[in-house]
Amino acid sequence: MRKQIVAGNWKMNNDIKETKKLIKDIKKGIKKIKLKGTRVLVSPTFVNLTAAKDKVKGSKIEVVAQNMHQAKSGAFTGEISASMLKAIKVKSVILGHSERRTYFGETDAILKEKVNTALANKMEIIFCFGELLADRKNNNHFSIVESQLKNALFHLEASAWKKIVLAYEPVWAIGTGETATPVQAQEMHAFIRNLLVDKYGNDVAENTSILYGGSVKPANAKEIFANPDVDGGLIGGAALNATDFVALIQSF
Ligand code: PGA
Image (cartoon, rainbow, N blue to C red; front, side, top):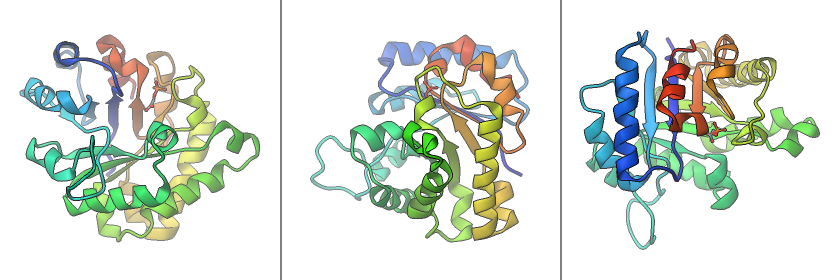
């Protein structure tokens, strides 16, 4: 059975003090609620991963990285490798976020390499993808999403999908306050799950969590998460506030 997941993508926010404080507050918040099997992920920036790992001890919160380089090691100034993450026991990584694609030139081809490297290192991947506003306006959103998935993930064997979580994030909804309607989210998530059925069969499709991301907040989460093919959320802005984040975890 696929898992429900609420993942906080902290982006380039929170210094070490703020990281510890936010985790402390989330820990306190989730102690008071029933997690009902929901996975809770937080993704601080690289320099704070070790402190975050330390701080989540004794809780169900998992710490994930926001990115990773595709090469094993070498002359890639400013980059972080899979083995470096593994060495500090970070076992999951977000790949393909639209900000990485837009501002740092990450293409489907690069992401395919990153996916392969992460899997070779037995890491779990939270794979982000989604269309631009222009794609949706031109009615190209389904074909864009299909090509993003095919180009970076559909070379994988069915068995690799145990390590993949999908995060559909329409770019026009990220950080804009504009969310996909529950109908739009369900429609796209069902489309994605059908692609998995066609390519890999029911087993993979039914066991792969598909998260929605893009301006999810306590006020709209219930409606979005209630959709049969939405298995949780990748949360930016609202993940920076412990009260909101805990409310999102309770929104299933
Ligand atoms: P947002 O970001 O919730 O602030 O829109 C989502 C994301 O970028 O993952």
